[in-house]
Length: 290
Image (cartoon, rainbow, N blue to C red; front, side):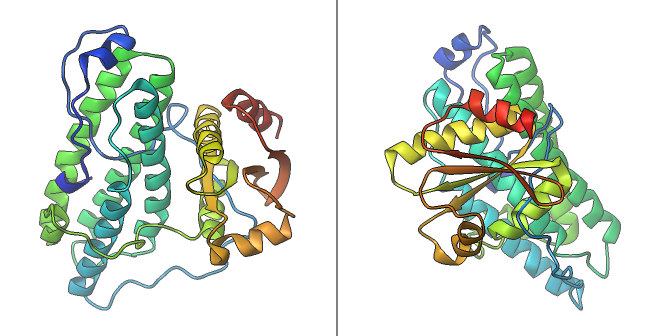
C-alpha cells in the first residue's frame, strides 16, 4: 500500500519469457496476500484472549498509530531482497504475503478514528484486498499464468493509488514519505496471536520453526511457505533464536529441532508434524489430510 511500500522491480524479459509471455517491463507493487486464488488464513496454538485495542481518544492519535503501522510494514518490507530469478520472485512474493497476513490483524487492532471512520473502513478493505491479490498472484506464478499475473499487477497498482488517496484523506501524509521508517515491528503480530488470526481466516495454518541464516532452513522455509500458499492455508514462521516468540509454542508441542513444521486446524488442533527435509508437495498433502 502507499507509494513507499511499492517494490520497484522491473520484471526482466527473461522472467517474462519464463512465463511464456511478452508483456514487457512492468513495475510490481509491494504488497502480499491472495487466496484460492482468494486466499486462506492461519491459526495459532492458543486463542487470542486479549481484548482489541480501544480506538485512540482522538483522530490525531489514531493517525500517529496509523503512520507507525505504515513504518512497521515498510521496515519489514525493506528486509526482503530484490528478486532476480523466477525462484527469487516466487520467494519474494511469498514473503510479502506473509508480511501482509501479519499486517492485516495489526491494522484492525488500531481500531477506528473518532472522525472519518468511513474512510478508515475503506482503507481497511483496501489492505485486505491487496493481501488477497498478492496471495492470488503467488498461485498464478506457480501456474506460469502470465495473463493472470498481469491482471493482478494492474489490480495492485489500482489499489495502491486508492490507498494513497485514502491516506491523504485521513491526514496520514507520513505514510507516503519514502523516508518514513516508523516503529519496527508495529505491523507484525507475535506468533501465537498471528496463528490465531490466521486460523480464523483460513481454517488451517502451517507453522514453521526455523533458524535464520541456516541454508538448510532457508530452503525449507521457501518450501513450507510455498506449500501453505498452494494449499490455501495460512503460514506463520517462528524464529527459534527468539526465545520470547518460540518458547511457549516449542515447549507445548515438543519442538526440539529446526526446521519443524506443525499444521493446525480450527479449534487449535495439531494435525501433523514434519521434521527435517520436506518439499512443498509434502506440505500441500499434509494440509489436505489435516
